[in-house]
Image 1 (spheres, rainbow, N blue to C red):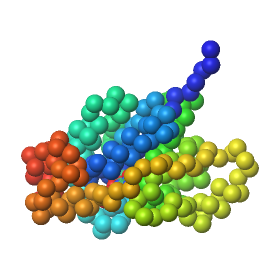
Image 2 (cartoon, rainbow, N blue to C red):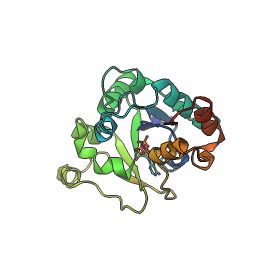
Image 3 (cartoon, helix red, strand yellow):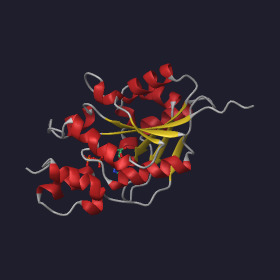
Image 4 (cartoon, rainbow, N blue to C red):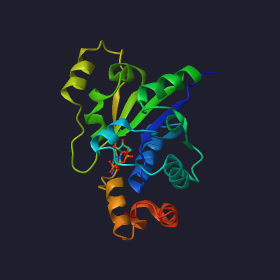
Length: 212
Ligand code: ATP
């Protein structure tokens, strides 16, 4: 009997809030990568977002986690994983990957990200090691071409064949939805149900998130 290794997707984000493009990306990843499970990893303190937004306060970890849990219900292969939420200090993907492989040796890991994150991969902590440990699965955002930064391209080309996991493109319908747009619409009391679905919209209304 062959011992087929488990294929696990890692899908991190600030999910502030989670929206339907996240769900669509996760569903495409499940199917196209033939994953056994996909871990949704809400970030504790997403260092890049904090830097970009001048330290703008995120919705609390509890709220962001609760909204992800609402979004993923009904798909047993989706798992909400608290390991980044619980970690002290900033969230670094490499720490999550190392911890996951230590706890589940032999598991095959797929890092699921959008193009905007892929372009910045060379700024992530220990990105070269990351590229050796996981397959990166990238989805386009808006009309952008999927392209690695020059640093990442050069690194991948310089590796002997077989040394790196591959980078794969995920086919998914383009959608311009972003959490920023959802927050802005919620602040203007507009109907966000088409962007986040009934359950998450209900949660945001009930807890008066993103009102100011
Ligand atoms: P914000 O607007 O606050 O920057 P966001 O919408 O980019 O947030 P994140 O939680 O940062 O949401 O995204 C998590 C992951 O999902 C990232 O890898 C991001 O590239 C990807 N992603 C988010 N929205 C889309 C989309 N519309 N199409 C493809 N990928 C997306």
